[in-house]
Image 1 (cartoon, each protein chain N blue to C red):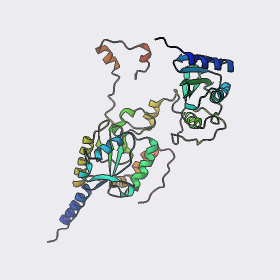
Image 2 (image 1 turned 30 degrees about the vertical axis):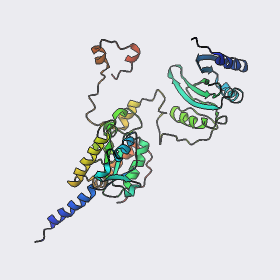
Image 3 (image 1 turned 90 degrees about the vertical axis):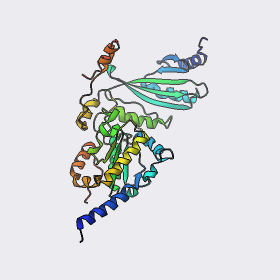
Image 4 (image 1 turned 45 degrees about the vertical axis):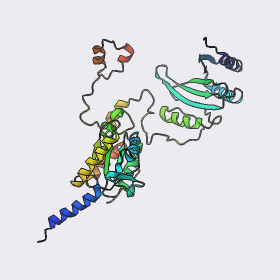
Length: 192
Length: 181
């Protein structure tokens, strides 16, 4: 049976007529993506809540695109009536990342913003929340950023019990044994 | 004739005998290993036949189980709990995370060697240890107690400076008062 995107198309048209400067995409069945500049995120969230029946806010997450010097914030909404996930994605610059506070639209965004402020260092001016969320007394750069070297930090903070020095990268040995080749993109994660 | 040494041994023997047969375990779970304890304590494996049962507060407990990985944030609480427990007190490190970091060996937020921060009497390896191994660990601890070798609390008091130094290296803003034992 051919999959049809009738309700997704409808949502697509509604968003298309309501907002300029956004890129829309039907990713798959019951998933619509919106790429928006950061000033348009709050209007889109509000429009989705008030006009499109998006009652539920599922998640706010952050992706570190270190190659492009950008953070990507992903707001995921869920409508129980149409059963479509709406992903609102926006990119902000990595140096001095500032994003608009949106916890007045959904209260639960507050918690996610606290997490992202702690783990990625993204600032949300004007929102009220305790500075510490999961970590305590953290003095390094935010730990979920990709330029934070976990292994370096571990080796200078914690001691390793003797007996684990012989841990080796066995992937090459296993690949040779089964006659496979390690793809190039995986080689850069080698421990050597 | 009155033999003082011998009398001391008998008293010690009775003390250790009673201690090893009534281990009250603090109901405090860190990490994922705490899920093995309900199975250990309930009817199938029934650890209470060894005298092991739960205790509600640190002051009533003899035994502290560190069940699985220990984040630095929890370490602060564990030290506090351990110092509130009354002598005699024993610690069991549970799972490979407490021994050498386990699968969290490169995690920025979990400690790798538990015995650098609090004295550990028995380690149970495994990821996770099944109730059989937990009971084997309890039996091993009972053997150590009956031989008078489970003296973690004394070790902690004698080497407090060394333990404090290690603890403060991980916990940046030290929250506890300096005790004077």
